[in-house]
Image (cartoon, rainbow, N blue to C red; front, side, top):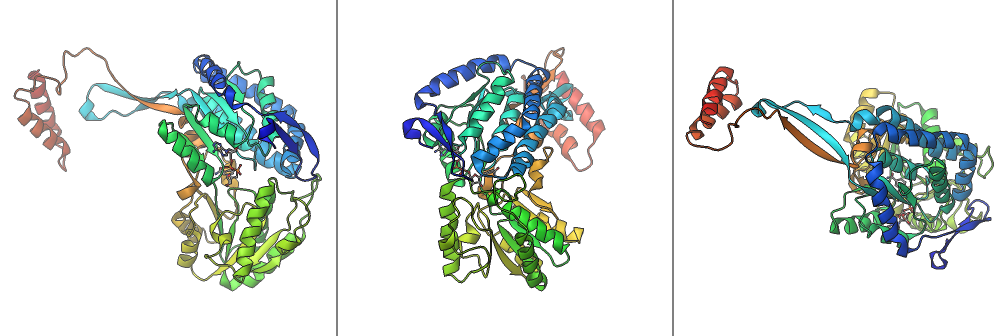
Length: 512
Ligand code: NAD
């Protein structure tokens, strides 16, 4: 990738092969992008939900038809194995279309709300109205899903979308642009701005009506600052340091398999994963050996049958090296994998389990985003809850136990956007559940009903049939004050007195 030459170089991380380059969008094009989007919004937002849904279904058909090619494109661009491209990028995208088609109309239609008695004779509703143009800025780790799902939700809600995909995975950005073009979305409804940080910045400053950002806490804060200047609403989906808690009564083989998958899927470059593993002391040695056994079974590579692919972004390796060196210098012990000085297999990192770690280490406090799993023993429920909550993040967590009461009790005390019991990560695959972070893991939610409603103004509507000459709270006020006192006392007292309320109400009415 090289934005100075206004070309994004595409290099397959797993092989180092140069796959080509694509032109970057010039920052001078920002105004024309927004102009096209705003024009397109007028028509697009006037379509009914089911008319917009037809475009989504056409896109779905194309994705299904080209599923294998798309999976291979994602795998080549990220270094992830093709199975993960299919399961974790393409499947959730298709499923989100199904969810939107099935529930979208109901979620966004005018909702009737009960009217309180004090507003006698009126009807109340909530309406959802799209705001205009959304800027979706997406990361490189799940470059398809994490761009597509917010885009599809915004499109269904009536928005025009400008996508700024990650410059680290430009091929996927180009692929998504092609899919929308093929699906025949009207001109300007979906536009893709290719490029890096500068392009992201320029489009953020271009004053979209909404910003949906997925990426690091650092960038999230910058975007929120720019958005606040113009009061632009945002959703920020940021990093995580997800704890996994294994109690002694858990199914240990399952938990060990689950831990290895949650820690090493996508080479650990997952915002919601297992970044810290807490194991109850009584089973700690046994669990450690189960973990090691599971890791031995894994195959790294970029073939169809491999389990763990390569890292995607070279700079990430240095972050991991720094964290591991810090931990090792403070007494951490490597249980599997290699010391940082022996990492010499290109973008493939060894799968590392580290013990003898503590909460003063960067490895425990900062997001790693790579195949490193630190393991910490614990003795009590209270202790592990306080350890699990002891980072600035709160995206996802998992609790493993055969005692559902205990597992639920612990889950409820975790400060986390989501908790999975006896599994990990998969709450993101459920489009009926809200997705988002607590603490510095983000602001706002998507997926579920929230996923469509966040993009809309929530408009309160109160309707009166308009046949009465006046209202009791309108002028004139003469003689009404003591009557209002009696009216509200009769209404709000512990045992509401309807007879007095009705009598006084009629007396006030007569004063009009
Ligand atoms: P990043 O913040 O470096 O980049 C994300 C996107 O922001 C990219 O498209 C980038 O070009 C753009 N960008 C960078 N600087 C910008 C600026 N100043 N203005 C506007 N746009 C700018 O993140 P990344 O390295 O691509 O992704 C990894 C991070 O994303 C990790 O922290 C991970 O936890 C997080 N993440 C979060 C979720 C979630 O849903 N919560 C999902 C996946 C990844």
